[in-house]
Structure formats: C-alpha cells, structure tokens
Amino acid sequence: MSSIRRQSTWASRTVIAAVLFGTMLQAPAPRAQAPKRLALVGGMLLTGYEIPPIHHAAILIEGTRIVAAGPASEIKIPPDTTVIDTSGRTMLPGLIETHAHLIVLGHGSYETWFPWIAAHGGAGMLTRVMEISARQLLMAGVTTAIDLGAPLAESLSIRDRINKGEVVGSRVFVSGPWISHLAGAAATGAMQVGFGGINISTPEEAARETERLANAGVDHIKAHAGLTFEDYKAIVGAAHKHGIKVYAHVYAEPDVKHALDAGVDVLQHVGSAGTAPPYSRELITEIVNAGRPVVVTAAHRSWVYPDTAAFPERLQDPGLKKAFGPDIYAEVQDSLKNWWTLSYFQRTDREMLYREAGVKQFIDSGAVMGMGTDSGTPMNFHSEALWREIKAHVDLGMTPTRAIGAATRVNAQIIGKGRDLGTIEPGKLGDVIVVDGNPLFDIVTLSRVVTVVKGGVVWKQDGVFVDAAKRRGSNHAF
Ligand SMILES: [Zn+2]
Ligand SMILES: [Zn+2]
Image 1 (cartoon, helix red, strand yellow):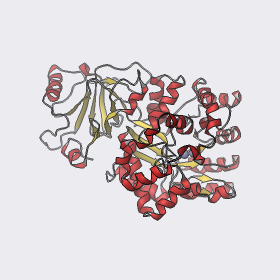
Image 2: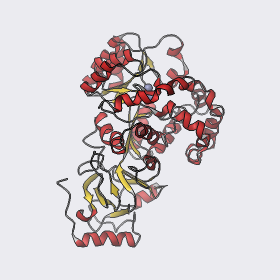
Image 3: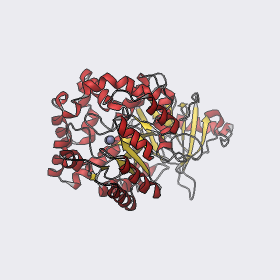
Image 4: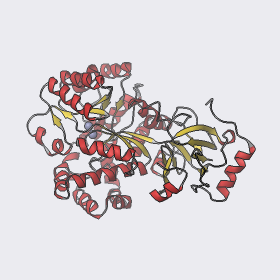
C-alpha cells in the first residue's frame, strides 16, 4: 500500500461536501485533459487478500485504474472527482466467474432450448441470449467471466463488442467451441451441437483444432468430455505454444489424473455435483503439491436442486422476467414446469450424498481453489450462480474471507490476469462492487449488489442500471 496518498483536510471536506450536496455521479464542469476520477468513499473495504477488512475506507480510480485505496482518512480525493458514498456498505473487488455459459439462461433442457433458438431467429436469437447473460452477470457484480463453450463467431463477437462498449456486460474471455472425444449419440446430441462442440478422434486432430481456435483468437481452450491422456497432451501442447490456458471438464478420477498429468491448467468440476465419491488421498495430494487450481462448480446441481425444492418461487424471480423479455421468459418457465423430472437432475439424489465430502476434500487439503459455477445451466441463473457457489463453500467451512478471495484474487491468478484484476490496490483495473451489508457476517449479502464499477465506469448505482446517457454524462466515458 506504499502508493496510498496522504489525505489533506481540504480533501476530506471536499468528499463530505460532495456527499452532502448530492453530487454523486454528477459530472463536474468538463475540463480539457483532466484525468477522469472516481472515488468510492465511506464503507468497509475487502481488498481480496486474506487480511482483515479496512473500515471506513476509500478507493480512488483515475481513468480505468485504481490509484489509491485504504482508510478514507488517508486518501486524498482531488476536487474534481466523482464521489460515490458507500457508507454503511461493503466494497470489494469485482467478482470473477471462471465457468460461465453465455448461450444458456437456466432453461431446463438443451434438447428443447437449442431447437427453440433455431426456430426463433437462429444466430440473431443466440446473440440476444449471450447479451442477456453478459448483462445479468455484470449486474450481479461479476465484472469478469470465463465462457467455456459456445459457437466461435458469436463468442468472439460478444467479447469484442463488450470491450468496445457496444454491449453492456461482464468482461468476458472465451473458449469458443469445446473440444471433446465422444462416441455414439453423445457425439451428435443436442448438447454437443448446441454448444458448438468439436468432436475429435485422434490427438493429432485435437492439436489441429486447438491450433485453429488459437489462431482464430480465442482466449483459452475448453477440453470437454471423453478425451484420452494423449488428447489432453496434444491440446495442452498446442495451447501453450500460443500462450493460452486449457480448462478441462473432468469428474471421474482417471480423467482428473490424465488432465493433471498432461498439464491442463485448471481442473473444472472436480468432485462436484458429487458424481463420484471423494477422490483418493493420492490424487488430492498430487493436485495440492502441483499447485494446480481446481474449480469445483459445487452448487449447480447439488445445491440448486434442494434450494429450488425448498423455494420453487425462485424460478419466478421478477429480475429474470425483466432480463429475459416475455418470449424467452415464457420459454424458460415452460421448460421448468416439472423441473424435478428434468434429465439434468436425474442423478442429483445420489450426487447429494457426496456433495459435502466432494467439496471438503479440497477445502481441507489446501488446494488452490477458484470459484466457478457453470452458470446458465438448468435453474442456475447468471444473476445468482456465483453467490450461491460461494455460499456452498462457506456452508462447508471455507471462511468468508477465503471464499471471497477465491472468487476475486485467486480467480484472477487462475485465469492469468492477476496483474490487472482480483484485488483492490493501486495499479489494478477499477473493478469494484458495493454490497448492502457485511458479507463476512452473512455471505448472502453478496446477492445484494448495489454498485458495479468495471474498468472505472459505473454500470450500476443504488441497485439501478446506469444507462449510456448517464455514463456519458458522468466523469467516465468508455
Ligand atoms: Zn464442463
Ligand atoms: Zn460447463
């Protein structure tokens, strides 16, 4: 925190005056070349590190980057700064989602969802769906998301349009289609086709497809199901030549072992959804010793299912209706009418037997744990998947500080963006969210995101989306 600025008395008076006279988010008189500044002042600050919170804190952002953070009494706020009063609330780094699917919105069945898209506009509808997902994520405080499976052209397009400010959304990094090695019906099923999956049959083919995706500009590779050790090695070799990471979708112990030994960068799903009893002690020890990150995607079946049984009303959250529009909302509602009969949940009773042991084996082992949710899968809405996942971990003994660190600092490192994202400190991108309450006391506070700042731009304030006109009128153009 060496670059924290010393506060002067006039600066603190400026802050108080700005707050008292309601100038939050109002534009100061435009001045040529003046650096655009934003400050969030007054609330508790969780930096993303496993240290105690900083009380009555302030964060100062200049342009897109954080320039100072610490106790408000020590931060000098220059006079032409836009100030957001965060008193009584908690500020933390923008959340990072390491396993999202922008082409699904919680619909109950891939077998009917993808044909419905095809019959209702095809590529145009798919694009609309991805835009809805990206916006839901951002409004939920997810400022960065890793997409792990969608058609190539649409994936690259949404990423680039978000970065240009043409689409409102979480900053996304995309895999494009996943690579799998499947036989029979699985190779041509609705899921494989809908997600645009590439089916390979040899390691050479796996390397070629990886190469092709990397050249097309994807940010990472998703290694999906059925791959052999040689396939993983071929994918990893080709991906690493291009400096991009490989995320593997692995459940069963032999698959996890193959992916680990082949050098896959992030092990996704491992132990989750309780599809298998806990792994052997040897495998856990190897993962821990290798420092290989795991993202268990714990909640998407084993918590979402019982939570929905307890409160099926969650499926009619008014926020969903608003986000989807009437046509998509009606289709999703129709698909969830008898949600407990969906094939997606057919093994959930068995999975729930193992859900606790499956997650605890990693929490208690000291493994590098990120946080990702498979958001968009049935009943696993982008608007709430991440706080549910974090809650599942906290329920099983992860401290709230560690869980928040996993969803911010650790996730940033896992995705290779630790220099820019994941913590609140000078030099990092200005990705900050404000939640209404104390998440260290009640982790579900993370569901109450009132302010979202991404890259120094305020996208949500006082619980309301900040539209383009206001964003332009504020200090912070794109
Ligand atoms: Zn997966
Ligand atoms: Zn997935």
